Figure 1 (cartoon, one colour):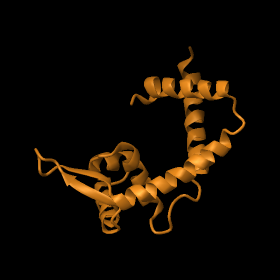
Figure 2 (cartoon, one colour; figure 1 turned 60 degrees about the horizontal axis):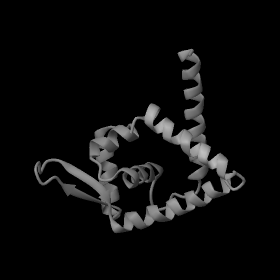
Figure 3 (cartoon, one colour; figure 1 turned 90 degrees about the horizontal axis):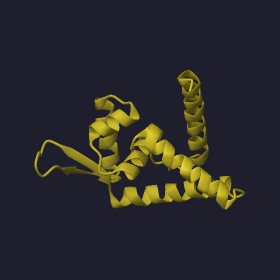
Figure 4 (cartoon, one colour; figure 1 turned 30 degrees about the vertical axis):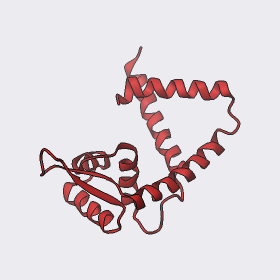
Length: 143
């Protein structure tokens, strides 16, 4: 196996993933929040509870910018901060009820876009995609 060719395929694949993600999430962000705030909420929704440093790492932001955006999301009642019972200095972030409702609406729209995208796929095609996703998650994404 030529690992350089494999790497080029991974680069092409990740580029396609970003393009498809943009297509699926087009027009789902409410006007009341910025794109970076939406990205943070989306990450929290699929990974909660998370720490500010995990958000910082995932969103490739500086810690001061992460803190500022988290403060704005808290002020909008979209997230809640929870202190660790063992180490009171450690905080976890999760969606508030309002944040969950907002992200449920966004994910419903994303799912509708996804359903449109796969509407002509056969059951065999969908099973093959599911197997491929499972393999990618286990072998490449490691989570």
